[in-house]
Length: 114
Image (cartoon, rainbow, N blue to C red; front, side, top):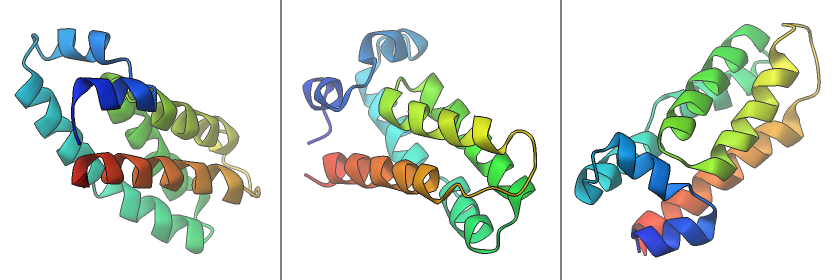
């Protein structure tokens, strides 16, 4: 169930995120739902499968920004690790980092669907 306690248990910094949303929980939940449906996850998956480092970096960086603004700390951390690994724009094996991003996405989807 998408609520503050569940998000806190996930590891989200709900206090800071709610400040950004002027305390409006309904708006915060709406933004989380939008973030989980963000096209950058598809971009990351497709780019990862195609070994397109530049596109992977751009998608991961966008996910990192959204997750950070919404206080979704575990997703933010996973996307940050991936972003830093890809920052040099050199071929690398980032499959574990990509996997962690999508694991966090699935956790958030589960929270929303409960």
